Length: 231
Image (cartoon, rainbow, N blue to C red; front, side, top):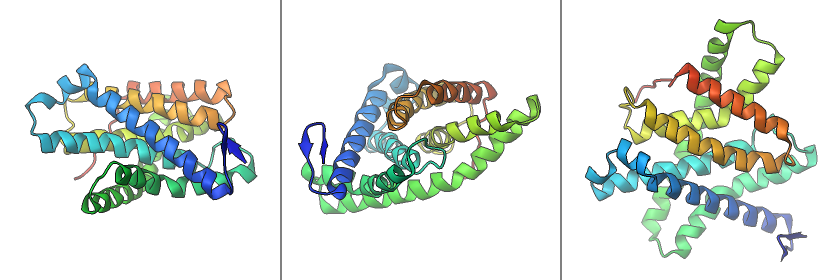
């Protein structure tokens, strides 16, 4: 079996290689947003200590990694049933792929263990938060008109990225999110592009999911529901 011209001896090897590519893409996305002039201005990054800057970058990175995991397990992902089993293997390989990349960069074991715990913590947190975000989105939509199947599908489609964006914004701001809507929009926009880059190829490049995702995300921004959460 091959992928991009590479030879694999097993589906497990292919899953690991796919997971590695996705985590590298998440790192690239995080660095791009971290380097963005608007993001640095809105976070007052230059005035922060190096430790705090590193913490913010780590939140951007782990948000992308967890988003990948949530997409791979999304129940509405339009892929053949037999392919879902493979995506499950990829999802399980994602945390290990990131840890292995850090190890290859010479990161010390104690920091690798911290990263392993951070990924597990944020995944558990955002997987749980999806239920609250779904409920809030349904209430918002129901205020405009009775919900139909299309509305419910749109809510489900945008759920992973909405949940992660709200959580990432919350952690970057250390829970102090009032008056920081512009920063939220930057985080949401960056994660939305990454979400589309991940999901559309998995679904065979169909334009319908892409269009529906954009509609759902625009609706979230318009509603300005930040899902203010307790620390």
